[in-house]
Image (cartoon, rainbow, N blue to C red):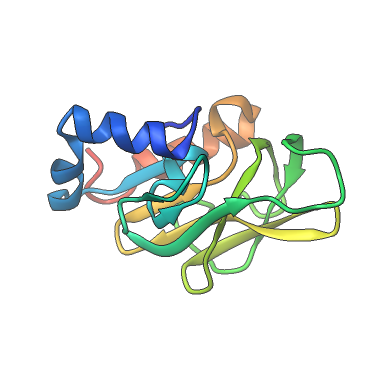
Length: 157
């Protein structure tokens, strides 16, 4: 799991300093990125400058441009647009969000969420890589179910 609170460039710098980037790139087990952890799975991020991500997902991370308060904070529903193991049984559930940046991706989306009439990517999947923009650990029963789904994926244990 790649948890996330903080900034894109700081997270990538910490992974590099600790020698985790190469280990992540050769890993074959499922990976779950949470919030910033999902964002760093992308090709590039633009938070506090331009920073290369892990490039597991062809995507960019950009500031959320909405006509509403940012960061987007609080419970919001997800719209599962592609059936998948990690969100199984969680269709239309509410999850806790807290973010000012969003992943822009067009090919690996498994759920979308709407905030202030703006639809953004709330979960992605590509091969053994999963990411959620929300915080399952703060999302009550729905978050527990998501973690159970992840733990039960083939190859996690």
